Image: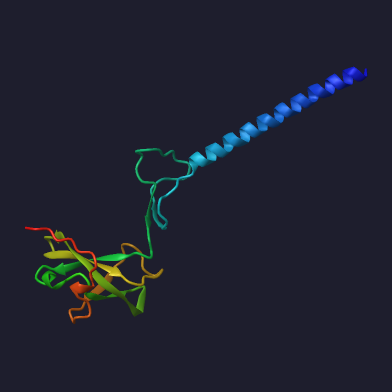
Amino acid sequence: ADRLRVVLAEGALAEALAAARLAEVRRNEARLRHQRLAVRCPRGGVVLTRDVEPGQAVGPGSGPICTLYDPTSLRIRVDVPQGAVANARPGQRAEIRSETRRDQPYEGRVIRRTDLADLQKVTLEIQVRILHPDEHLVPNGLCQVTVFSDGSGTDAEVTDVLLIPA
């Protein structure tokens, strides 16, 4: 009888150890599924748009999941009349006024002139970096920009220059 109890106990122990191993395997499978569900982004930012719904299947080649922006690195696209765009130079001081912060304008610097023309408005685009953005500014918002040509910003302030011969 004692030997029978020992054999039954050993069998119960083996069954419990197998159940514990099965539980461990299921836990590891669940962790792996969770890791594969996580979407990692190489950069941080604030979600601007979500392009998929929760539970929707995504994979390589399925397109963007969301659109992010970095609130500490905002710049403004400014439409400048064609006749005045030649006066805009990298490094020039700019003042940005927004409806979200009417009492205090933002400080900025001209980054560059682009070749993007709007034939309807007869304008070219320049880009202005906002030096100290805050949470009041959001992408695709409207602003008024004044670029100063009073010598407060010059080409000498630009540190990275690439010259391309004609």
